[in-house]
Image 1: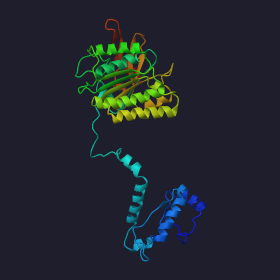
Image 2 (image 1 turned 90 degrees about the vertical axis):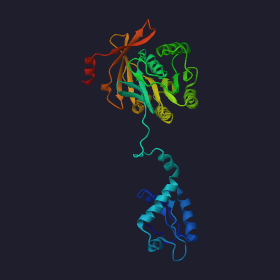
Image 3 (image 1 turned 135 degrees about the vertical axis):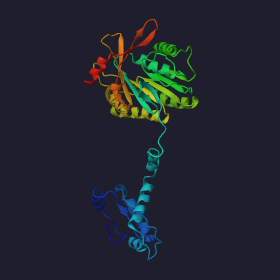
Image 4 (image 1 turned 30 degrees about the horizontal axis):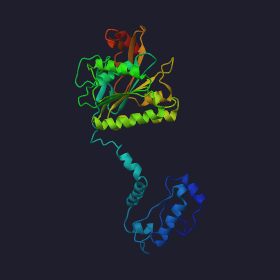
Length: 364
């Protein structure tokens, strides 16, 4: 405690500046009479730039009951004084604490279990409230692979359809399935939509499937379109089962811009959480490398629940799907899944797992 002799004294700013370096909080604790209340508020305002606070004791302000010694003389304890200080902090931090309250974990009331939307064996790859990252080089089959996920997401019951080695939770409630493509032409995306419908055993698109070619939009407009359409379809269809963003790097100006990249992935992660859905985000490898593209790739790698890499096999007709990261398990528990183009089917088909010897090499 520091005494300045009288509440009407002038508090030197340079003194307060020095105190700021030594103490977390500087609190004015003046008498609670008329003069004390007026002066404490005046000094608080004058020293606001230093974060000086003002605490008013619960005393009537009479000659016998107005200062901190009177407060303790009345039987109050240190803990009660600390309680007053905590109430002061609650007032100052009210908005932040109210927002933080919704984020607090209540161990006695666990959150609703997230449903695994995409799994390989018993290992969840993409679940509600999470991002599934799908990556690979040019021409490895990323768009065909994600189309298979969409095909699985528009099936309303369990089937033996070929989903290129994974299982997709059936869309039993007819919730929205959304595919946003930022790279392919409208004509190519139309062809791919036809293939995924055939894979799902459908002749027409279900009402809850919405496929968008965003190549005609500016980069700044694309994310806004995704955010607003997701909100609408969430309410229109009673929820969102799966979202695919094919070409997530095309939602920002530069994949190497750290601020833009962090903001984008934070927003995608937020959308997955508030709509309780799985968002599959497709991003390229760096050319001639095995690293995800730029700051965007680094941030996506950090936030994704799983990362699947699609690469060409030694036989260039075959694509291999390999898990690079799995949050709820080990990548080594997921087989190396293979698919290739089938002329007769007019689409990629699953051709089984890589031999066990290949899996053993990954452990070395």
